Length: 568
Image (cartoon, rainbow, N blue to C red; front, side, top):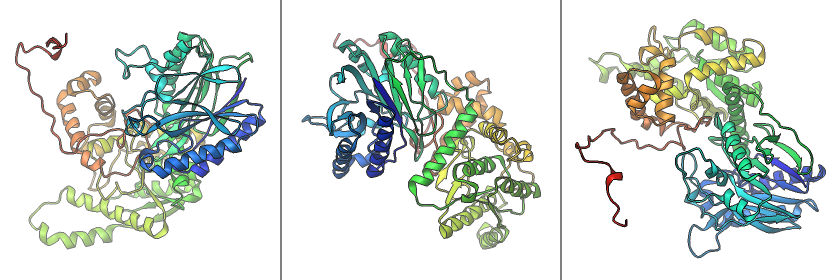
């Protein structure tokens, strides 16, 4: 049987548009001789649909879209599509996250997702009921072990525990599946490709069955999907692979001899680059609300990298860079901003904020009498820049991109209503040390210095007071970033971070407190593009009002495990 893996880019809520994308891919699949076309999880509605699923009319419309796709599909082609369907049982959540088999103009079979993730960016049990007992889906003489995304991830044998009490792929194998088919909406993160390969390959080897994996591509707000659809043979080898970060379709013949298809060798910086470009492009195109992207150019590395990524995503004609010198801006920073704009071919403006800062200082002089200048005066400059950029955004309908990185957002080294202004935070999940890697990647791809060498080599500085550098307030980023990665992404405590990084525990404690105190700022930040396993925003939910304290257990108190069970 010839199976088409249709790696498409749906938009959340765009039922008509998604249906046409699905049908377009179906026609190409039929033209390539496919008998079955497989599409991603919830592709009818786009992922993640979130609380759109609470609207009864939306569910009705989604099912109308499914019926439209079924009735409009090419003759002789079977299709597997993902959609929300109503739960017919009298108990439980009202919806299932389902994979539907369409043939001859109708829905002929379905398989509801059994494992519903509620960790990180996922909140599926908010809306969906786990699917009932597994069953096989038969298509043209082949018993398909059809399942949805998370259903395969509980098969990993290495962890000391499992999230769920069921293993859907084991259940399908026991029923006599001949081919596993998984439809997914699995977001990108650095390292995700290797994790997917490991769990799918292990499943194939365990059961001696081939595996078809079809993943969504594209970006919907914070989440970026890399596609990475593939076929594994019964030995676990990848024998067919779709391109990453682009719409793609590959056709696999179950009877044809195959050879391993190794993963392309890509460094983390290259993957992050491609993910962020896709994230910017889809945010602009799918919202449809902005003609151009706008950002402030400080002459620093963050704004330079953001600008280069935006130009790659949108085209230089749709990016506007603005440098806003103050009394403390160096001539080199303004020159570097101008050089960057010339290298990228973008529109460039220079607007001094000195009149605005002078006006604010004069206005505030009476209440500030007797108080020495401090961070308040520094923040006035950042907020003057923020007001300037928001005025341009309002007047011309531009999307303001914020340029702060994950290191700064982690410790609160950012100004509310100043440099945090904007509609999309491009680098908020990229540590400062990774930003430098991105700059070098951008220059290497271009074969020239798109980002000026002086921008890369100068000490990072907000330039809000004479001679200021980031290291006046923070440890060197080479020291800071491993601490943040261990604390934010690996959830280690202060002692664990110190042991993992070799950093002084006193420094780790100071950084941890900075991270905790800055939660109120992050809650007010623009949505950021996710490229790690733990991004700020929808995937990291901590209270703003909290304290980190510990209670020392009394000597000899034992542990919970020592308490005998009353039901034993």
